[in-house]
Image 1 (cartoon, rainbow, N blue to C red):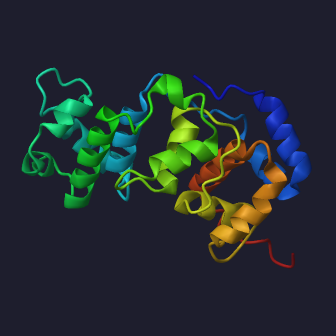
Image 2 (cartoon, rainbow, N blue to C red; image 1 turned 180 degrees about the vertical axis):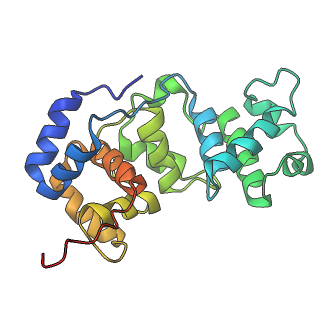
Length: 218
């Protein structure tokens, strides 16, 4: 499922609000962020925790090992995680900190601290961040990933995200990574489509470097 907004209008308004970003939008092309709108907050957060500070390939391998601990190999339920000895989870490749975070997440899901998918859809972005960051191992970045990729919220700007800051430097021709404060300040121009801007900055970070030298005498 794609982000439920008018993608063309969002890109056009961003380009009008910020010319360098507009040039990057033209270079990258149509906006194509897909969201997983049917995943429960529990599943989205488990994935986010596992993927923290790992490459996508390494994280996917560990997540597959965790799922393989259970007979059905389907995504585990909170009670299954809670009933699994910590050493077994660590044997699947999870760090001690991530194991503790998953157990805390499972317990708080069962207790109702983590809202259901139906309930979380009715909450504001700020309410969701405040709620989720009470969980061990879930910081603002992790909550923002759920807002974007799990709920499709259109105006989220993860100012601490390394890839986004790298894309910002490429887009605005900065020699150094911008500070989160710089990203937040520039991002005021991008409301109410900061999620769309974020996607383009992520794509910008993946573009090959243009190492061509200007012709002699240029």
